[in-house]
Image (cartoon, rainbow, N blue to C red; front, side, top):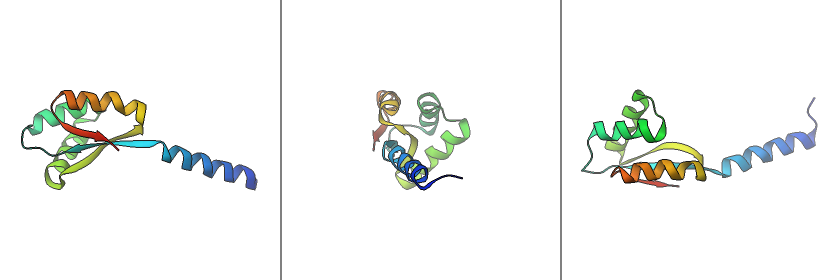
Length: 92
């Protein structure tokens, strides 16, 4: 049986982990094709083709979409790849 101190520590660790999670937000633009966006999401964010297609549709119709979640350091390189490819993205 888990004691109270262990349970509180476990909850704290979970909250701390959630607080350190960030997200790459991809924004819609009028420049890039669906194919280019899909290709870059597969390349930069390790999406499956289906995930990349769904994200590109969400970006198109909603204006933005969270495409990758993780620690800031891990997302920096991925976001840079998207930006270098001409996409509009930021880490939040």
